[in-house]
Image (cartoon, rainbow, N blue to C red; front, side, top):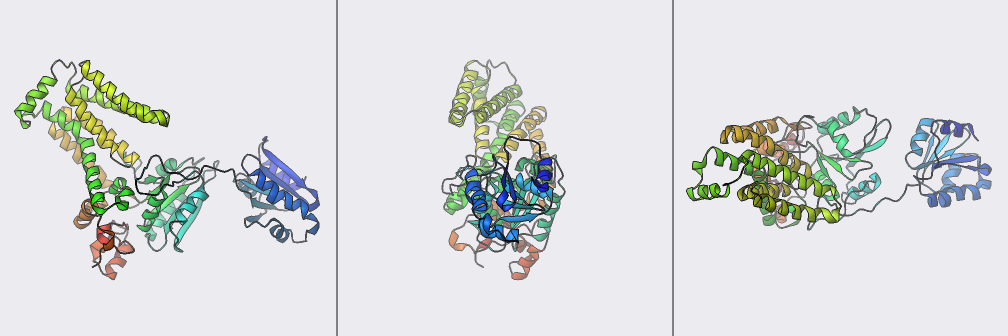
Length: 497
């Protein structure tokens, strides 16, 4: 056994799947991990050619290997640490008397791309990211055949050695924001990075805020669209979720169908989500405020009907609302943890049965079931899971403030929430960026989905709204770090002037 082979094995703990194959005719020893490589490819493309062509070996071993193996990925190294890393990255290591040669023999076949279950689309593409970094990159490149597409790689985690990829379009992304993202990625020194959720918590601006400051997605078409907006995508090996940065609040309420359908339908769906957001946050709190503190604001007939439905209810309105909200969250969580075939049916049937039994038992009033049901439906209409979860959690402190101070407590908590959102930033971009300019707010929130015949080929940066529509304004918009630099493809901004 060569000295290089001894050095390589000494850096590894004994394992049943660590294989050493010797090719004495070629003076080469092949080391690989059988559970991480394609054994058929190793036999046919590596061991077979080395054994059959060992007689024709030339003095230049590297040249002979390139001609013999006919493989594009052959890397020469003299460091044991690099050889160990290559071995753990699904590669085979050829141990020569004085050096190592790393050969890519591919790993085990992972699952094929299929439609993400968390981001269903009616008219969008049916493929989604997988746990393979190479597969995810190919899905992005197949949609963006742009020579300006830049991909930079990091290896994070002292023990996991996880590959992290930063993707952006060089002439669309703001270079100062790109530098900030690279700086934060370079400052991460941890034992392991398991998934994109762990990485997100390391690079976000405010670690104490409940609101997500990076957008996660499994859809390659959404990543491609975000790159065209001047944003950046972060891919983590081993997870199907990509991170999009910077992220502003309205980006969590967009779906692929908004752009795949007619502009009237897209606008209607956007209005529906805005109403759902408001209903999910304020419905139970306003019900408590009006019934406990300001019943004079309710029509008399409705007040009499509410009083009749609450007759015999032993719980105060606050405890009644908290009980139903907790029950809804329990049913939702149980449905998420059950097998997919049973989870949806359990959520629907369980919610109906529990609500009906609670009303018949006299624990809660029917109107409270309606209010909590509207709240749950509003949360389901929010397309992003993280944003929907935060919306559900915000309801509980708002209920307590409303129970103590009435409508003033509801409005006060809403103002505190808005003030917190105003202080948030995502890589220097204010979280409420679209609301800072009235024209962009109208375009992005209300009527952004105009007919496709009115669009330019490339979206304009937000800076064009501040500095003017001419070429000078566009350049200024791209060279400023504040909210007017983050390019976003608001369709209303792309019409012909």
